[in-house]
Length: 394
Image (cartoon, rainbow, N blue to C red; front, side):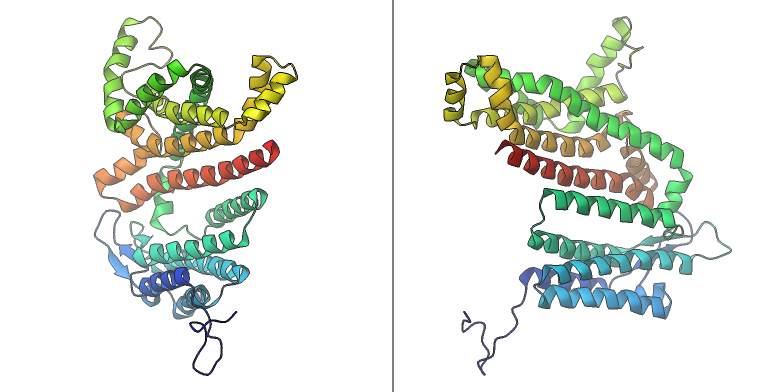
């Protein structure tokens, strides 16, 4: 039904303005006034910001601008999710290809040390385009399988972009090329810290959660201790573990041989494991407490033992909540593993802190972007798994 707010003076219905679209449009419009890329004559020299039409040939710049303007208009005027998704994706593609074209256009043939990097205008536009795509996907109400397919397609397109060489002239790729072997070694270390500490937390946290659920006298003290651990800042906890692990490495036979040292991966791994226990234990307790008592009583009436009720009835029904705890732990650990580089634990933080020390923005991005992408992918993927498990339990 048309309301007075929706009707014009002549009785016609005015188009409804999308509020989030207005925010997206403001971001896109503002980005066009900001530098699109930064040109630096050397890796660490001060850069010069260049706007879109200064950074690209006129035809290419007009094509990129047209994609952004189309997304701007769609964000404000269209409420159709498919249009918003298509124009948001078009804007992101235009930005990605435009940044690569700017690198090729601006790189001097006689200066191999020059660096071209995306600047604030690119990142603001990228954020706005991502908001538009995300909003469209929310409106489409994709199910868990649809979200997993969308995640897979996105990862494939990003991989294709890097494999195509379209960004080969950008300084971020130059930093990667010079450190490719080290990059993948540290990527393995980062995943080892995040996934390994999660696996250890599963082995220890699930039984502790079941114990806390079954023995109420254990629950409050255990949760309180884990809460205290969670409040300790990551750097402080890393530092607190150096001395005891160093003593163990020096005095316990074989400890040093299996990798236990005062600095390095051992204290980082142990700290991430300790941080992982609270979400695992708490979500196990909450999930088991959330199982309907009527279901448990029915299982008891069928003659199931306490162990059978736990593993055949309560744990499967609590699985979605437990998986939510696993998602929290994995996303948390992917981020915290970055800090482990400060104590020699390796991971992507190696590049981030090197970049901070050298005032090299692209090296910072080389260390910061992969954990962000991994955390996002883990969150989306495990959210879908949680939803699928919930449907299975129902």
